[in-house]
Amino acid sequence: MGVGPLGKAYYQSAFQTLENCEIVRKGFFTKIEIIFDYSQTSIAHHLLKQFNASEIENKFAESPSIEALIEPSRVEKFIEQCKDASANSLKVNILKEKVLKKI
Image 1 (cartoon, rainbow, N blue to C red):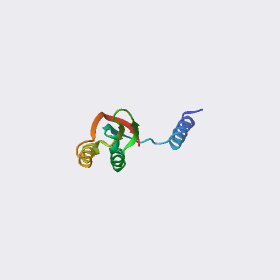
Image 2: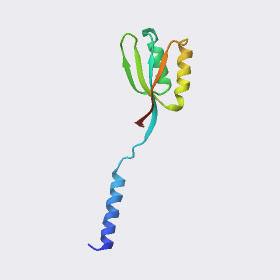
Image 3: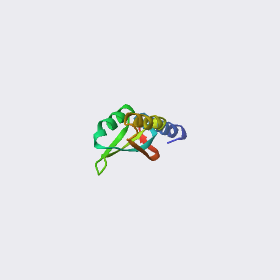
Image 4: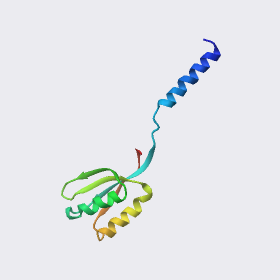
């Protein structure tokens, strides 16, 4: 194969590869933990839904807790809403600042 046809073959191969691949979008999220009383379960879940939390993991121990991912720009507002909705009794901990997740 000469230089011209070889270049064309490489071009076509690269073009087909890009045409058939999937674009994966990722973004950073903050991993939080909410600790609450059993009586506040519905408040915690409502707030998580309101803030579009994802990868929600419920943990049931002496005190129930939930771990979830929230957009970093919304964390402070989320913490504020938790305090307001529960008379400051929902405890929110930031577990990890930057978690990379597929959007």
